Length: 223
Image 1: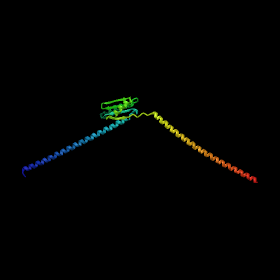
Image 2: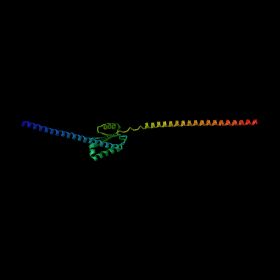
Image 3: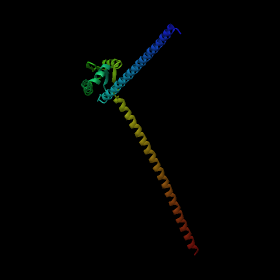
Image 4: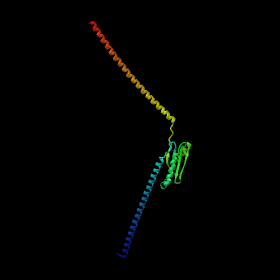
């Protein structure tokens, strides 16, 4: 083999080795990028889970407050506010405290209350007008940041309730009257049967006594 051919073969071999090393480095880098992306995705999911758990904690806390059942309440809390509450316990405590005071203060004639909490703090408004309060409540509770919604229960129609109670009382009275009449009829039937039995026994005894007297009288005449 000539020197030129040897040099050419050597150059070809060196190029192949270099290309292989470069390819190996590229593959390792790509794997590292994928691994980094997977770690970042896992970290992002973990943060999302932490936020979701924190939201559930806040919801349970708010739900435990003494909200008046006759007042509709709508509370919006932005994700920015949740992030700040997670990082700033003082901010969290202040926001929960103002919501707790809202729950205590919410009494008729207030019919609806709307609240918004963002990373800047709290804002809220209450309504005494039923129609305006209902409109505001519906719009506020359907917002994307809606977090806690407490719909007022319908007031009981006391006139209708009283009417139902009277009807139920009347049904109970009729039932008791029927039971009383049935029992009285049953007792009278027993009394009649007893009287009839007693009269029958009395008649039998009387007839027997009269028969014995007659036999005695007949026997005495023959003597």
